[in-house]
Image 1 (tube, one colour):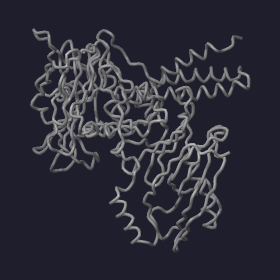
Image 2: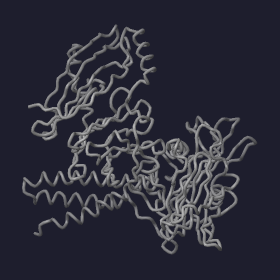
Image 3: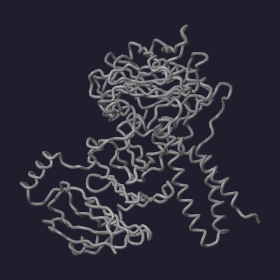
Image 4: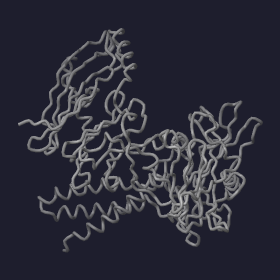
Length: 345
Length: 258
């Protein structure tokens, strides 16, 4: 987790303050099926599933004991952000629950340990929706333990006062709801040394397979996790994006992720060729119109990319990759539109 | 004929004044008691629900983490400016279609305004016909962004950054006071936008009144220049067509560099 991600983490917590004091109940997320919405009562919860057709039918999402520290008197107030799977049967909730504020000169920022919870829908006999936590232990910790085994991560020897922290950030749900893609971080902080024994900045990708109920890595994720630039924040963005994953693979549709940088570069090159050709074909009076139109299009391309990043709550390099992907798609569409206007030789 | 269509004038903001410590403290006290500035005072401004787009199954960032204030709405109430809450600090400010809940485009500033931004503020000046807007993203010494956005057929047709141009307009007057050669690339002033007026003279024009100054920290070793600027931007010609700078105060440096 780099500094920007830490800022988001802090932001997630501070976000609760963003709601007006009179807005006790907040509708956080609506299910894609439109059956229910997840609401939250600030400051201490609970999280509720409210059925759309019958709002009086609500289910409180049980929080495991390790996640029951909403609004525990610290300066910041946590706000959960639920991400619901496309089939509406799974709810992933990254939270900031421990709220142990650690200041590290090495990191230069505050770190809030974040628990993550995954709920699964179980249908009760009465036909009402009921959601249960997938595991009673910490989801984020279990994910990190899986990754440290699979990737043979170096684990720092703990000292008596050392404290290991975990966090799991949402990246994507696969289209078939079969996989949840998360980026997991962990670190060890020593109170006596007032510093990190193991950096909490680094992060690795992993899936939770909702069909097998297990964490897993595919070739796509292994390639990213083993890429040296993944956690090298001195790497420039173009190189770093080769280790970024922004899409979860559906089951049976595994494979490498298309490179957004390469796609954008190719589409942009083609667009420039066609644009220049059109400019040479256009009458002088029409050139300014075309320039104006291109300016407007660039504005809409950039706005669309920003909206994609916001809608998917991405930050850092995942955000950069998503922007490039969006710009590549917009550019491809623009190429097709301009090609139709070219005069045939 | 110069027809003034609308105007907006802002109250004076605190600036350190040279050689007057008592005056300085008095101003600080008055500002404190008076609640200091009216810039970006969101508490007195009604917020309007804005949904915007969202990804199915994900929290809606606009509903949860953006604010649309009534004061940013265009005269016809169709358009407005939204800014992020702390949760999404660093995300862009956007021009939106409030009636259709559409995001039209981001406001191109280097440091977007966000709720409770330290020493920040958001001032929005719409043309009377709702076809253009000047967005001022206030900063500590001068605007972090001063962007003119023009709308056509419900879309942003052009964005023009006016901030740097205004700062540089002070340059010749400062150079003259300091008896040095004018360097427009390295000689401008910090400035406060004091008033914005829209005019209809053939096409739309924007008159901007600013207070400019140098040496905001009042170092004795630097000279201090203060003055006023009246500038008129013509949207049809896409350039400033008038600019007048008046010096109101100059204090040379006491030793050291100027």
